[in-house]
Amino acid sequence: MTFRNGLASLLRPEDSVLVLIDHQPYQLTNLNSHDPQAVVNNVTALAKLAKAFNVPTILTSVIADRGGKLFKQITDVFPGQEVIDRTWVNTWEDEKVVDLVKATGRKQLIIAGLWTEVCVAMPAIQAAGEGWDVTVITDASGGSSTESHQVAIQRMIAAGVNMMTWMALAGEWQRDWARTEHVEELTEVLISHMSGSGIAYLWEQQLLNTPVPSNAG
Image (tube, rainbow, N blue to C red):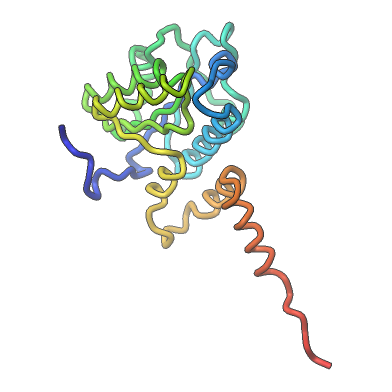
């Protein structure tokens, strides 16, 4: 097994492409590995991160006329962008999706979706076997049970797939706070989706902008 380590193994926005898979009402109704609202929050944050860092993002659903459209929170981030509706359970067997990913010229493939054990694991394992550098964002994904989510993660790790959370991805894409071109957008994502840290940041700004009382008599 080849260990994933060293600087080159870290994710870079200029080399990344994101595929969001089947964040739809049907899948959400049987999401039991996570709090459903947390997954909606996390995948929305992930979508906003990709947009902030200019990472190409492919949106795809499966049989949307029965399973429902992608969450509005996601499509609102990419207004007017086509959502590729598949019949294939395995996204990596859908030529249109794969062709769009290949057209970006990028090799760091990032995936999140519902459910982890099916619609995430299948394309991740296939793409990794074809030589792609595959990362799954686990907290923007979820399974029909805690066991199914965790077993899918173990299965993908055994196949050479990297696991991360959306906040870890944000840190790798930002990498250096001296890179200021995306800081404003990143900060807005953290305020909206990072719960206590976002609130703490706003509080810090409030304190910094509070005038110091004058002691002049």
